[in-house]
Image 1 (cartoon, rainbow, N blue to C red):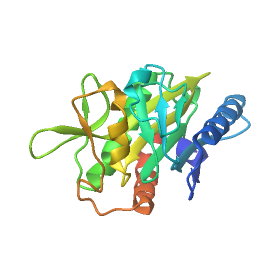
Image 2: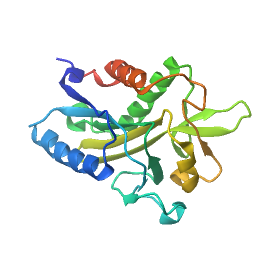
Image 3: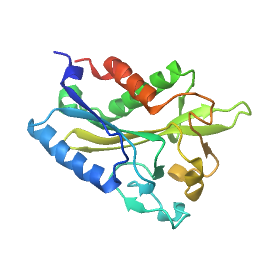
Image 4: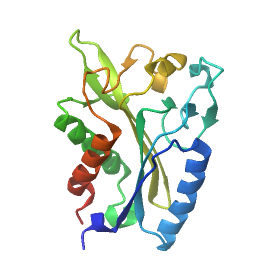
Length: 213
C-alpha cells in the first residue's frame, strides 16, 4: 500500500485559532508516534496572528494591535491570517527516512510544483528560508514561509502559502528577520486562483512527493 493512502487530509473551512491548532497537532503527533492515528496533512487558515519561531527576535514585531505567540516551530517571525493557506504536515519520518533536511526539501519541492502549475516560478534562496519569486524589476519577494518542528521523528507545523492575504500585516513585522525583502501573494502576482483550486493542486501533487515508500 502507498504511504499516501495512509495519510488523512483535513480541510478546515473557517479560520482555526492558532492555539487550538497547536493543541490539536501536539495530540495528533503523540497518536501518530504511538500508531493509534494515521499521518495527517491539514489545510487551514488562522485569524490574524504573529508567531515567533525558536530563532525569532521579539524586536522584529513592530505592531502591537495583532496577537503574538511564541511557538516551538523553527524559524523567526511570520504572519498568519485569512487568505493564507496554512499547510500543517504531520508525518512519521521513522517510516519515511530520518532526514529532516531532506524532508524540508520535499516540502519546498511540493509547493514549487503547485506554483509551477499556476505559472508562478518559486525558488529557494541560499541563506533565506522559504520560497521566493523574482519580480520584473529583479527585486525578490517571499511567496511561502516554512517552519517545522519534529518530536520523536514525527513532524508538525509546516508551510504557509500567501494566496490572497492582506499583505499590510507583513508591514508590522520584519518577516523572518529579513529587512530588505518584501512579501507577495498569488493575488498580487496576478494569479486568478482560489483556496479550492490550491487545495486540489496540493492534494494532486502530494501523490508525487509523499506517496512513495
